[in-house]
Image (cartoon, rainbow over all chains, first blue to last red; front, side):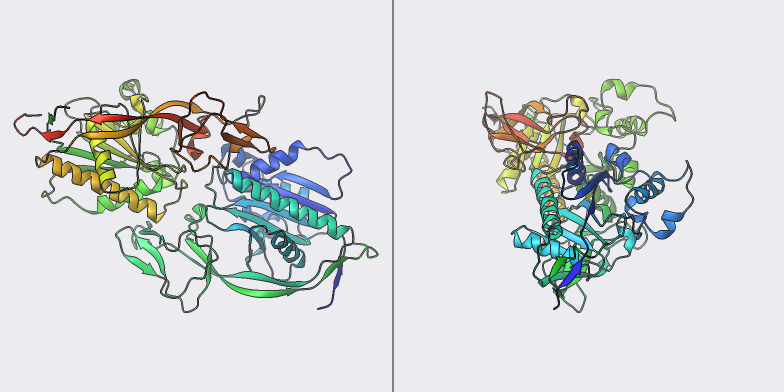
Length: 309
Length: 309
């Protein structure tokens, strides 16, 4: 595979608190904000508390999920004082970090999230040819950092901006409204390694290509529910709980009903579950998601110092 | 120690959803409510969704913590339509299950709770001579059920009613807003064993006395905070996280600051930590509680069929 030359990554944004009760990202951003830039940094980093009001209240969102407010329609909708806080905030963030998909937007955005699921560290991107994200992912693995890569073809509104490259860093398990030291440290290390990679890349280092395992989302599965009341009638089966990214075979236990009955995975294809029993997804009707794994070849990379961005 | 004769336990209440985002108790109560009593039950059980509105919204409480609304003052305060929902609800529950400390009140109340801390199953009572609770605790141990007994001299307003005997059954770790199948099953088993014990006791069985380990609360410890903003500056140290009821010695790591510094336990006495990093206690200024362990001798028990209650 031919080596690819790219412009430098000169402006980076690190966002925490897009969901106000995912505390590792919130405390990491607070720590980063304490360290004032002195102009000698090799990369310009904008650090942002995305949903500061929700973070203050320690809730996922105040009026509506901020992380669903970055569609083109939402970003161009007229807003007033009476608009939901998150609709106003998404436009503020778009002005600060974007405008989305414009030349003025930051080059790379890392949005920090936590999950109650046992995902480990997981980079989320929205295409399988986001080479920079794949290279960073490979770099994390190279450093023997525990991580899982999850690439899904979700709609682009899942992240504040979609500029040159974009990525969410998701780490679990951590209850919402709680910060666990090991999860905080993993996130801090993940962000630091990402920054190291960017600095090395910008300095002209050639990064070897290779293969990266990519988990591509196939579908969501809801909890079993009472047909009349829609109340959940089962929890994720103990044999499946915490086994994110472990292959689920047809016939494997999937749910254990509160009445005692086991319900099994009835799909025809073995797939990889992730976001198993994520707390915030009860309201979205998602008990877990399923992905297909494949190996993606990534080209060697180097910065093209002659080519203006 | 002399055997003690006691009246039968004829009316029992099982409450879930006193905190509306502690889901194991909520789903267990929903299951129990599906099974209509047919009059043949050996014990009359009242099953209650304590804070139904908070459970509907999946939040700890709507306006104020219901589990702090059972003081005598709160129960006798005049309420109107504009009073906080939980103030009204506590008086409704007192009418249904009490009145508190009266002869009409239920004999035993089991209030189901979950915690993000790794407590296992933990019975909470508010004195060290609540023999029925200690006997039930011993019974759970006898059945090789994983549990921890935690008795604290907390004020009596921590539980909906204080009648003959009262107890909260607390199980963790489980994130709030999430139900984990193994935690649900442990709670279901705990309630079933408690019911079995009551039936055996009422039938005239003599329960041997013996010794039970009792953890008595000594004090709470808050997170380190910024002196100006009061924002938390550290998380529970990884060496302490999840080690509820494991002895903490002077000098042991207690917190890991987000800046990297380790803070140690500076007490003079080795104590047993519990409710380590409980999500709901951030707002209450409690990172963990510390307890002293001691062995309490409990007398043999039998029901006095001749003695009217």
